[in-house]
Length: 268
Image 1 (spheres, one colour):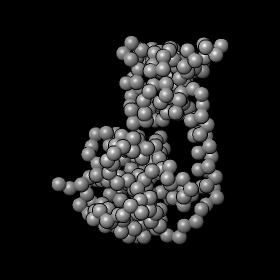
Image 2 (cartoon, one colour):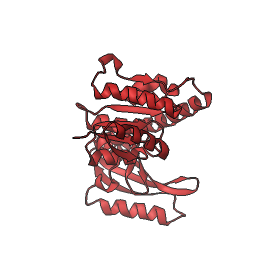
Image 3 (cartoon, rainbow, N blue to C red):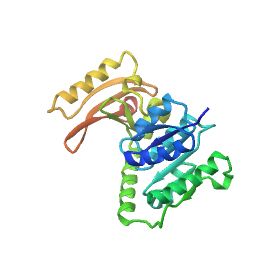
Image 4 (cartoon, rainbow, N blue to C red):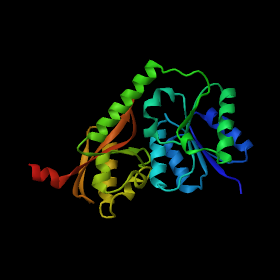
């Protein structure tokens, strides 16, 4: 029975390039064009191997790989991270969590490196010390602009993670794109139980109408900055503040802020 490879990248031509290489090696190819779609494929298909770009919209490669590691903590398929910013990520590759890394470069050189890597994966010849191996597709050197951008993204992500309130980011289809650490504590769920789930699946049947009404209210009333309601979560009574997620003047989703109601009442 042929093995299945999932290729996740927001670059259509790169997905086609990798797909063709892997098809020639006998793999059935499943394609996804961002981390969110990649998670959907993993939830609905049996995957034997995954190639994923690190920098992608909505859910990035790190978030996708973290989801996979949490979902399959004991036995996971091989994960290959492929990115044009591998060299800029050198100091944080252990946090990304892939098994192997390939730096993007000229297609002909990448083809040789991908085939070299696949020879080892298909023959199960990677020794323990080969984990987190990096394969270069050309001369690599860090680009100051890319390093600064990644540092900025990491800084702002750290701020969200350190907030004393929970933050849930919703896509336009109301699926969860991201959460911070406080949300996992408030809801008593890990990332694999939250990311890409419909937000209505997280609330009780009694509170779903409150949630849906809040989402509708904030998107249809342009003069309203936010709206809120209270619910009961794993940590107790929780206040939920709903705001629109607006990027470049476009409404692309919602942000939910979750506060432990009892905690703030005690402090007051």
